[in-house]
Length: 331
Image (cartoon, rainbow, N blue to C red; front, side, top):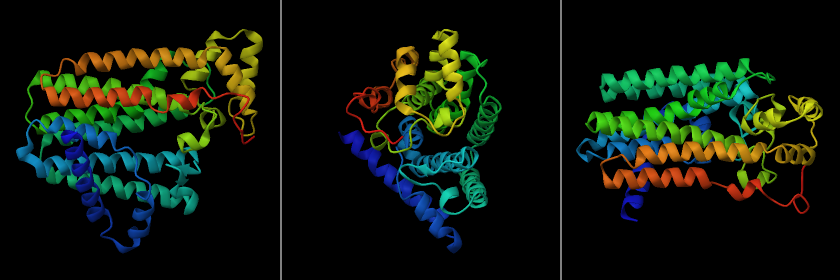
């Protein structure tokens, strides 16, 4: 409990630090307040704070690094909403919906620039190099996914690569840079990095699963968006490779269509083991993450990493299996 309270206090300081950095420009103030109106889980900032806690004598830099990571993540979300033409983010209207796509692009760029200014202030070349590369890889993942829209010939390795670049990469960089900042040895840096990498992919797999939930309120965002946008994510992929010719044609008829019979799609994906096979893949990444967490030679950090893995694997799992009879659907 003591460690959890300490982490929550540090996250509050990180939030204030971000506010002080971004809100300095008056014309950015309203956008800042809106973007951070609904707090996310701050998992990446948590990873950084956990792995850098090996050496709390560098506390000022630890907090600044966590702020950098949170800013980088927020910038990617704002840009992602523009690309996907998303209407909501974290249960409220997205920046591009409330203002414009131009605002979305520019505020995303502004947040990126603030992150890199703070990054330079940390004055650690290895950290700057790692986060610059991670930012590049995230963009690469978005481009790969964009090129793969409506493409049912994509294979599992390609899907896993997208998950790594889009999500796992910043998880990995968050843990790695925290470990580097704390002065951890090679084994420590390697174990926390690989644990976080697999945790990130697990998180993305679970996110893909939650998009096939029938309970929109429970997950805080519109459901079945991926299939509407033509994104081939894990539940659709597994259902498609398990399907016969007739069901393959049915699935293809849904991909990229805006008006859908959600109940029919859910039933089809579920009956073709799309949900079950995705859960199995998630458990593989959970086990990989646990393996590296158990190799961490610091008891406190190991325990915190295991908590994050557990939380990611079981998050809102109940939302995936509601009764098809009792759930009210917005068709």
